[in-house]
Image (cartoon, rainbow, N blue to C red; front, side, top):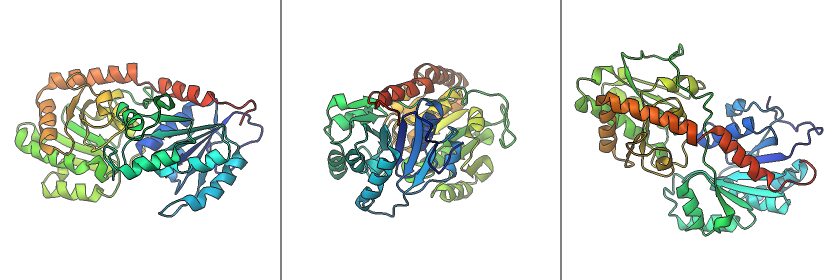
Length: 386
């Protein structure tokens, strides 16, 4: 089981320190959990610049360490000596930072002479959709010289790092997220918590943090428009949105104002997403920005027909009209039309769901992702363990 204290000194496996801004519910963090749980050749420690939440309970790898630095808002350079001392004490083989919020701590990792220093970019910041902010580009160049290898989770991010940011192509590796197809798989047996009945209801669902970059209100508005677009089907349509966040109450209120709160289930954060996802008929991802979306991959692996915005890594997962539908971001009319098409056309919905299931299993396996990181982490192993 995970631990908050140092692991056994008898364990000579190399140590990977995963250094994040915050360890909380989210796609980035879920990817870290998957990696830790499925890469036993290494020991692991999670260092959060700010806080570590109960999300750590998803980590099952024995001896995993959790360390929160409790940094307040603002620059973190005053934490550099503490991070330096921590890394000298832990003696990791690898330090792996993720996204700009943690990238500055590559500097104390360089000073501590960590053998392999890796930095991943998972997607755009909320304040910099598309990566056009030149100040953020300059910060990445400032923090980047001591990084041995950059990991881009999507082709769009790879192009960003080798283009506007200016890192050499040989320093950038693209490793897409993988999905656990043993855990996320179609199922005809609904859990007790599921409020709807297959065949009687047609469920449009989403999973994600209820915050602006995920654009959940766009999906709420599109769902309400289906009353006009699909009048015959409207009584059986249901909306499910799994996830908490600042826009959760706003979404609930908007559904109530539209007279559809009786056709929607917004329970907040759930720990049983893998059991609930197979009972979505249509999976909607209305985000304004994405890297490689874990929830989209999980929905595909559960046999849902996806409708996603044409941003970030989504086109790498969804081939429009082949295994799902792509729509422009922040366009509730386009989203409505795509949802209405899948509501009306059962054959198309079934075909796209089957194609997505096959694509997830064949091209985005968790095993492939874990193997890629294992090769990367093993490329600079010291002669003696961690």
